[in-house]
Amino acid sequence: MIWLRRLLGALALALAVASGWQAVALWRGGGWWVERAEDTLQQVYTTAIARAATPARVAELLDMRLSETPRNWHVIDALLAESAVLPPDLQTRVDAARDEDFSLWSYTTACSRCAYDLSQCTLGPDLACGLGINLTFAGDLLVLGREGLALGQGADVDGLDVTLAFIGLGATALVVATGGTSYTVKAGAGLMRVAHRMGRLAPDLRRVYTRAFRNGVDWGALAKGAPLARATRAEALGPALRLTDDLGVMRARAGTRGTLHLLGAADTLPEARALARTARAIGPRSTAALEVLGKSRLIRLGLRLSDEVLALLASAGAALSALGGLVAGRVLRLLRRMI
Image (cartoon, rainbow, N blue to C red):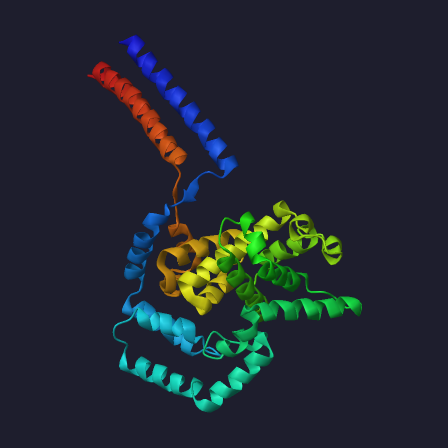
């Protein structure tokens, strides 16, 4: 029996060492979490929303949103879609606020501000007044003309705007680098420009495009008439194209307002990509999911423990089991001697 106890001890030690080594490797490699499979995301999110969107929670969020100035009607309507019945006093507040914000005078005033300056737009009905030309090729040409004039006058050039206009105009030729479609790239570029003008683009996301502006295009060669393929550097332009394509897919699934709302919540590139996966999974309900679950929980729901971590937990369990057997044997022997 002595040899068996020694064998169990050696096994427990070996499993503990292996588990510790694997834990260190996973910690350094950041391999604890991986993305859930796309085909499971919808059910995961739907279940989480059903549990979190209680009448009390929805009423609390609506109360907060109704107190804002200006009110975010995209979010308010998304929350209303998750609630069957509201308390009478809250329903009265919603109706009064809607009458106020959707009156002819309020709409005309907000529409004029938005059309003149995108930074004044909300995610309400006035947004349509500011989109117009910004989502078309004419908007891309207007940006390039405006920034070209600024360059000629020695003024600062908005590299992000120029890069997005370039991507929008060259979407068909550039799409090879993304694996997406020219439609989603074009749509994403126009919407990203709107987000930039509205101030809904985090610094981390802006840097993706400013790097592409500096390193992704040989502007001198392009000015001399070089073909697009020779004037672009696919490796440097790739991250901007992929992010733009993700945004185009988000717009197709969650709508323009939903995409702008999600984009405004993303502080980093990984967060933007995680929210894009959310939009692909549940489309227009992404806004309500972000509100009732919160950004951190919403992103965590899109992840699961990696297979390596599950294997590590199994190894740790086996080591503890072997160690427990060894300790139990020693305790029993001590009890026999005492008896």
